[in-house]
Image (tube, rainbow, N blue to C red; front, side):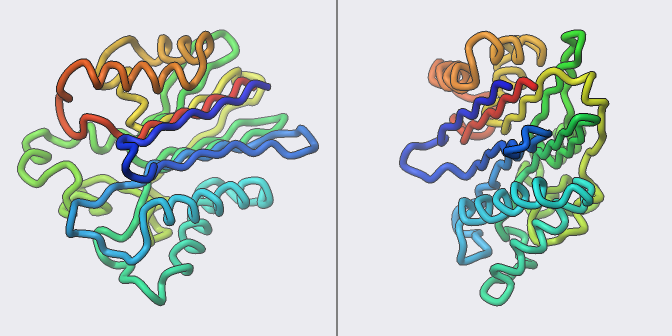
Amino acid sequence: MRIEIATAPGDPARPNEDFASVAVPASGQGGTLVVLDGVTPPAGEYGCRHSVPWFTARLGGALGELSVSRADLTLRELLGDAIRRTADAHRDTCDLSHVRTPQATVVLARWDDERVEYLVLSDSVLLVEDADGAVSAVLDDRLDRMPRETLRSVGATDGELRNKEGGFFTAAADPDVVRRAVVGELPRERVRTLAAMTDGASRWVERFRFGGWGECLSLLHKEGAQALVDAVREAERGGPPSRGKRHDDATVTYVAL
């Protein structure tokens, strides 16, 4: 098994708000992958005394522990329990109903000798390579499907769209959001590789158009996770962004099963 994790902050002067982990039990049977992309609130609109890195560390840590210890739970149930546990950690000190309560996108995968399960919530990406080398992307594309005029009128991260019907959903304080997650499972024998990335890294495909998802995974195979992050950073330095931040926290987790 080959495992790689690469991550870089969008701004070296600010904490990285992403989270990534891979757990492989000592028994060697199965494993789990967790990638979170913390949502940066607009200046002056922060709804919690805790930081986004605090939130992603809590939520990611809970997901890592539960995904290994609770094989009896579905991935939706795992995420719901992790959200609830994290919310309980600051329920008495913070307004969890605030639209800017800390939140994150989620990629979660778990595998054993028989199957590979996956969950994606919001705009991080999970790539799956099958036994024949074909690559597919598991996406929660609600944000991409929203009319551009709607995004322009209220802003892509505005509270009018986030975690509301007709908008898009992230893991925040309400466990019920797990119903919105994209989930599925595949036979273990049909899966060769998994790769999860936050949207700061998936820009290689989605913004800069250097290639499709298959070419992206090929780069990971040949040059590794850090090479993908470095390629995105180089492209960002080469010109102005088409929209949004020039640089974003970028995280890639690669597992060759």
